[in-house]
Image (cartoon, rainbow, N blue to C red; front, side, top):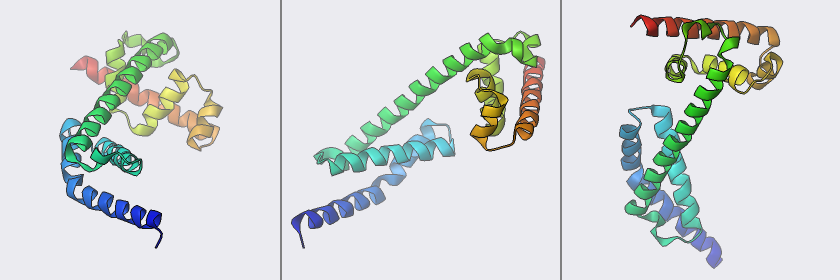
Length: 174
């Protein structure tokens, strides 16, 4: 057997064994840090182990140690929240600049009101509203992006706006 092939097999075995030993701790770390958001926990865990595999493949000796791995996990978490903060600020700014096109503008919304209401929508409703009013895509472009007909997308946008309006009204009544 070629030394490179044997080395690759050894590396795969070492990475697999390390993964088996450390997955629970990394998953638990993200689960607590994301308030139990399963999808986000899984995504960040996957990103962390992808970085681990890449680093181990590039010969970084510490890549298969818990201190190194947890350092990467912390960086992945910080990067996520920085990215989310930038997206939230961008969304709030873009939304406040575009509220005249949306029926909820009558409620004198702040960026925080919009973000709070948007976070309570279904993923599909949030997606179509962001594509239409933040990214400024036409209804036809939104339809292409989500793989629906223009008519179905128009109906979906109406339902999404109604859901957003209802959430805003409920938020104002609290």
